[in-house]
Amino acid sequence: MDQNRLRIAIQKSGRLSSDCQLMLKGCGVKLNLREQRLIAHAENMPIDLLRVRDDDIPGLVMDGVVDLGIVGENVLEEAVMERQATGEAAEYSVLKRLDFGGCRLSLAVSEEFDYQGPKSLEGKRIATSYPWLLKRYMDGQGVKFKSVMLNGSVEVAPRASLADAICDLVSTGATLEANGLEETDVIFRSKAVLIQSASTLATTKQKIIDKLLPRIQGLQQARE
Ligand code: PRP
Ligand code: ZN
Ligand code: MG
Image (spheres, rainbow, N blue to C red):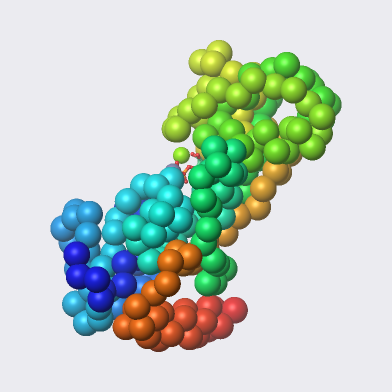
């Protein structure tokens, strides 16, 4: 890869991908995303987009594999906590909090569950893709639990008897509703953020960032 091209990691498919692409388009970055390629080169600026799973974005930025990343704060904070626990470096800076990708990480139980607050989950199994954020919340509540790690289909866990409760992302609430679950505690509120690697950037790359940031700011102001 060309070292003079700014590398930005974005989610390949999911809740952030279309808003990310729209934002870049709004910044004047011309992308050819028709092909399902991992790397998309901007046609009119020295920018390469890496299209990956959102969970991989914090690590790619913190390891300096890419220069920038757009990711949900939920995924970012979870990755930071995991890295801190394993003694790995977790350095990055937030360039901008974005105005899309809003969601919350919440606890939810089945409608039949007699929920009287977090203490009702003492000793219970909670299915989640965010074990570190969940543990921090439950530690704060003084409640011990067992986490059941699932990377997807978390909402079916109670019905499948894999867990007694879940801790998952909620945006419209449709997924909870469709699965007979009730949101009980919001444990983390999240939006998309633009983050930058802690490695020193080449001047050429810094110049592109200096061009992009005011454009992002302009887009957000126009939407306010
Ligand atoms: C989240 C979550 C639910 C859904 C909730 O998954 O796991 O499946 O969104 O949204 P709703 O309240 O509007 O129904 P998502 O696919 O966004 O995250 P992921 O791609 O990182 O798994
Ligand atoms: Zn994900
Ligand atoms: Mg999901």
